[in-house]
Length: 389
Image (cartoon, rainbow, N blue to C red; front, side, top):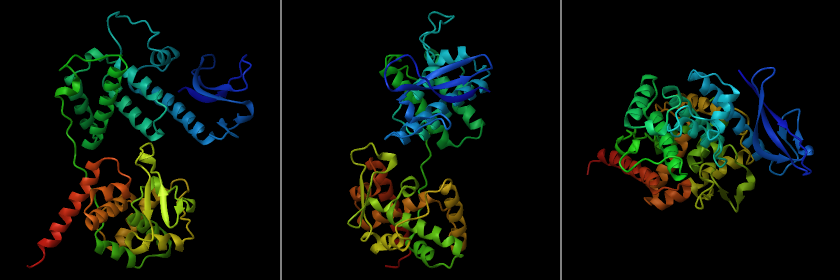
């Protein structure tokens, strides 16, 4: 396995800022460096810990560096899994396919190489998104190593789907892989790398079967039970945090960065991480109004400081929620995201207004918000079915 590390590369330039590169050690005598596009001064580089310091954007820069290093490590894994040795020549062929000489002059561009290169050069994506798309690249490359655009067709997709199901992947996971593949086929057409003739696009006739999501939520009775059921002392703080999510609809990623500084006159104002680049993403949550002020009182009781920022919190939190659900006799699979579904479904029930659901949930798509409206209508029908008129 190759070794990957960051190096500060002072060169002959007279500029104060020097480049940071990723050094790949293939063997004792064979090394390669890959530029990261990051330039910092010598005082802003911590060589011992291989990270940027004393820089106003240090956190974001270090995250970007970690993303690029991870992408190269994923490339090595992908190469080995597809039976190809990870060598400098292989690295160059992926990073600079335009420089490689094809044995078949008219072969055309390679889809798998293009997809990988396109993933690692997109700087606007979050690390989790990059990792998700690299997983698609790895799995597709194992099935079709070195596949050319011209050979990518309906049969390719059908065979890829068969391989995914044979490996035990869920239908929703397979649908996500299709979404990623389709994205880079479209991107290649936009960039002029390769465009299919009308009616020849692989996805023109191939229909991806999707699974309708099951948005589990807690009913009013279950919420009341959750509030009152006796619990061991070590579970009490997890109950409070979960109820806060149920009464505000925060995603776990937003809950973990919760801070009292986000409060403006008893209104919690934040831009959700998932939709932070959207102009309509900012959410205003009146904590003293929602659910009769319950979320405000819960947060206030903890001094506006939940213990939710430690490493591994989400995993531990969901594990504790399963214990709480068992103690309360709730049969549903409870997780942090069930709290968000609970909030949005109850908002839909109480308001019946899709735009209110969108505003309080920080949702961009009306179809997503309508899902909660329909869910609320279904629940109301269940309640009405038990009434003797």
